[in-house]
Length: 91
Image (cartoon, rainbow, N blue to C red):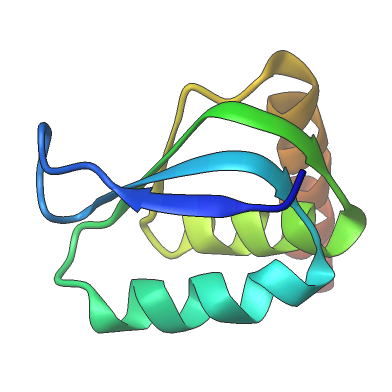
């Protein structure tokens, strides 16, 4: 399954629902979409099944910049926290 990005009009114009897998090629697309949206931006990851390292690094960096990550699967949340710690160490 590939990544499907759905605007979530039921919540707000700044919420994107992500469904499927987030892999390296998807990261650039997400960066562009988020840059084009008014702040604050939120990503609903409830239906994300798989992420790769580049995706997790992107999510950690996005969260540090103020993007709200909603409904992360527990393994993704744990991995994002690890990458957030690594980002903090490199600064």
